[in-house]
Length: 251
Image 1 (spheres, one colour):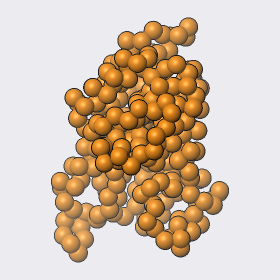
Image 2 (cartoon, one colour; image 1 turned 180 degrees about the horizontal axis):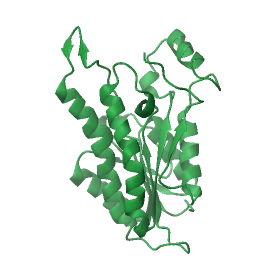
Image 3 (tube, one colour; image 1 turned 90 degrees about the horizontal axis):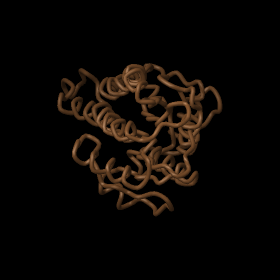
Image 4 (cartoon, one colour; image 1 turned 90 degrees about the vertical axis):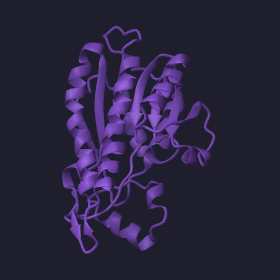
């Protein structure tokens, strides 16, 4: 699928994986609408071709407004779900039992928010003209290797990302008749702003655990994989791990 001249929606688009993907799509000629919370957008750098839109991925009305804005500028053919949050907490610990509201919040943002964007973007993409192969667009979701190798304290996060993995194939099958592909990327440890506050020693320890290359992944590498998926029309209904062969230990 060609990127130049299309509209694309990227959630979590003010920084990290979403910021890198939004910028990469814009460089390829897409009109990118980067959705994020107002506080994140205030800190985001100006990027040619990227329009920041304040939207909560769990809000049907805010996401619908953002999708309508994007589709009104150019044919909407790409949506990339990067918005997400993480938390740590054992089911039982010295602090007591896991807070149900915390669990619910992680599921709401990471899984339900992903589905909310997927469904509304798919509706808009389905209205575009198909290419010579019947394709109208592609939706890329973000899981995590925690979906497969969840560590101690990751019950909520792993559950949410496991749901994204489970969503991939049925969503691809559901949307096949509309000419829309659905793919998921499951990153390993990526050097995003969430790691900005960790020490060099801790960062080195994380890097040492990766079989090869022994370093953290870069957001630009996620963006590069997203662009490759968009370009490769036969990739559909699959989850791709981007982790340097890392398999997480229990802790």
